[in-house]
Length: 285
Length: 326
Image (cartoon, rainbow over all chains, first blue to last red):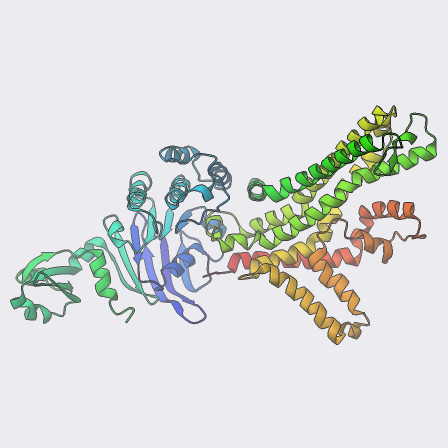
């Protein structure tokens, strides 16, 4: 199957800064891609370009559409949740459902209502009377009832408590995701998404610094715990990062033979957050 | 078409208070005041003649001459029109601020990101809002006014019948109430065209301004008016600065006032000139005729204004599509 998103030479210049710097990537169907980067790295700009919310230079094809010219048709196939609390505050639950049901050809009202039945939301409740977590439940109910091919989540769980956050991703995986759908998610809460991601993209200063699937990452990046006497030998292999824990050193290596590292100490797969910190460590310096 | 209907419905949901309740409450207040007036006159002036809105009930009998009938008819016209005047003022404020916020409020609270996540074109969104401002709100206002006027007439008829006069008969035999209703409804097409420059300008500001659309919407036309007056720029075209204030500044801010085209029709170069401006009856009748004089549609005032309004709405669509608030 062909790629869901193909971008080549994507650039976006704001007045003072370059938000996207000649970015190229492809996203295949049936993937859950984490787009991770520090604040101001260009994540939101990239998503906006995909959604046709901003102008840019370069080539971008989303599900066969050019987001600049065919935005309204593209939105029939794409859903997005752009952080919490973007639902209009005056709208009532039943109004939101009625409206989306009547303007969106792929909306399944029964599915939406079934999902809402599992929450505390009532049809006459207004968004302004809801907590952040409830707003996200409503938004997710609306989005999950739409049979879209691409779902874009921009910081969807920002400011939610842990119950809502866990539930959010669980619902997404159990009731929504399948091999025909693609999800792109940006978040700072990397630990919560790392076990559901199939692909990882790191973005920094408008450039993509890492773009790989999780298996490749597991093979390429290795963390090894080394006792003090073997530390100089490990350092000679040019680790990405080094930190001390209980008198031992933990080194993170990029593309070093596994056997060679196993000889030095206990080897394990690095967490995405450690990888992220190691890759981005000079960002704010 | 279905999407458009739901877009309009969405606007109605969001602005139910100003679209529906503002005119109804205004009408209700007028009715309450009329009722109070009727009661007061019943209590304090029971011995004298009862006057309400210019109708002396003692003259109202079932055996009236044609002169008296005409007078009563005119008074009834005024009874029906009076709510339209007050509700018209309310409607002006509603439409003005609705347009100013229409493409700005959802950018400010970021709910635009939700609306834009649905498969709706920006053109349809903007047009549905323009439709609400030019058609939906005026229709609601006119219906409310007519209903208020009729209810007030019925209240008066009941009072009159307490005094042995039969106003009921007149309500249904005189053509006035129905004429007035019909002429107000037939004003709507003119209103739509006439209001376009203001609706267009306010929506353009609403779609374009990064903040304070109200300030921009006022400062630009009024500032340019002051500029023009100061340097007497209109002298270049052998026009006075009054022309600029009347045809540019006022049209871009005040054209949403209902019946705004009537004065121009009466005193300008419209087809309905008044011969004797001191004849109150004639002014009234002519103003009423001017309000739904479709011939006015081909005057430059209407045409040029409409073209400018449409151009500004197209501009608003463009900004709605591409404005990136970062």
